[in-house]
Amino acid sequence: MDDKLKILIIEENKIDRTTMYRTFTNASITRKTLKIVESKDAIDVLQNTSYDCIFLDNCLSTTQTLNLLRKISSLGILIPVVVLIENSDRGMIEKLIEAGATDYVNKSTLSPEILDLVTRNTIAIYQTKAQLTLANQKIQQNSQKIEQQKQQIYLQNLKLIEALQLKSQFLATISHELRTPMNAIIGFSQLLLRPKFGMLSHQQKQMIERILNNGKNLLILLNEVLEFSKLQAGNLNLKPEIFDISKLVKLIVEEMRSLAEAKKISIKVNINLQNCILYNDSLRLQQILEKLLSNAIKFTETGSIELKIAEIADNRIELAVEDTGIGIAVENIQHIFEAFRQLDQGTNRKFGGTGLGLPIVSALVNMMGGKITIESQLGKGSIFRVELPRQVSSISEREIRETNYDYPSNKLVNNQKEPDYKQEIHSKNKQR
Image 1 (cartoon, rainbow, N blue to C red):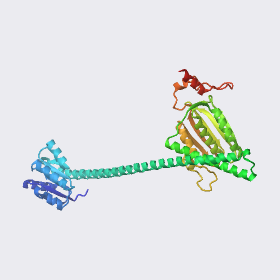
Image 2: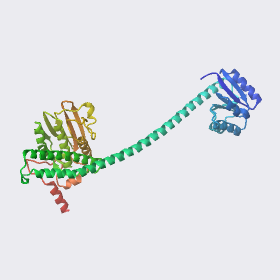
Image 3: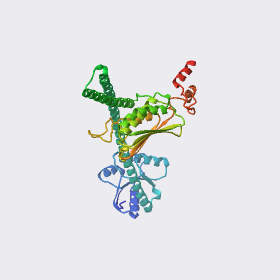
Image 4: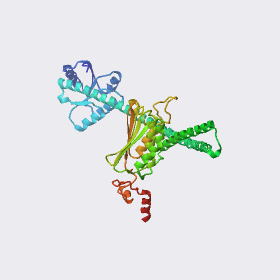
């Protein structure tokens, strides 16, 4: 703090003016200006000259002193004010501070040393308060800006959600509309290939087979877009049932084997379960496995693919699809489940598709209360691990017991024919 201070004393009593002047003269603070005025001249002086501190004598009535303090404050004159009081009336002091006084000092204890201390403390207190006020103003301004930004973000989110809904609706509509003519193309192509429609030349047969294959591929893409749109809109629900996962896996692998054999890739299956019976959506589980296996076949040029199913803790199972394919770079793994994203985005990319296969798998796994993870090394292959509950949450233990099937401890023994669970449940409900 600069010791060369500009001090203003507002004092009515001439004798007290002289006393105050002497006291300041004997104080250790260096004064640049020391001016003493009566209260009637105080406002004019303050409006024309800036001061570092004001000493206001309360020899006037308390009401007049309070009015003067409020006047100084209302005019925006930002100067610390010390009020000189005759007695330590707590109520009066609180009113003075509330009206704008920074500090007070009892006239009977006034000395050069106390005056020096009070002056420095008052200016320091005032500066601290001013800094706090400024900081609060900045905080309020920042809070307002943050609130405005939050509102803008909220409005932008609403627009994005609306755009996403429109996009999903459009994709669903266009996919649905395209499926009808595509099914017709596939159907007529299959009819033309039947012998009863006449003999076709080799070239004609090749052309129709090409139409049929391309139609099937396009229908698969349309179905993926339609399914993804339904998932985004929340219009896809699980339909759980009791089924044998080992039988489901064998069926899926047999269907996929021809694709693998065309690339001279072997598919191995390793099921290590104490009980192969699950209560889940078998159709959605089939989709998950088909997409993971087809993905592995697509990106594997040589080697093998292995499907492993094993028990894990908390009545859950793990399905792992391991391949010896091209693998995924570390920086790309975080994007692997993003919709419409493919690692090769070029128009001449080697591997086709919509980029929706893995996002659909991830969404279905989440619906089932599971999780999916990936381990991959570029040039060495990938492992997709799917963790699923044996029993989806939409069925209670009571309902399972009512099927009269000891789940999950019961299992097929000595190749016995498994019971018809749906028929059994139907019979139980009929008996009720």
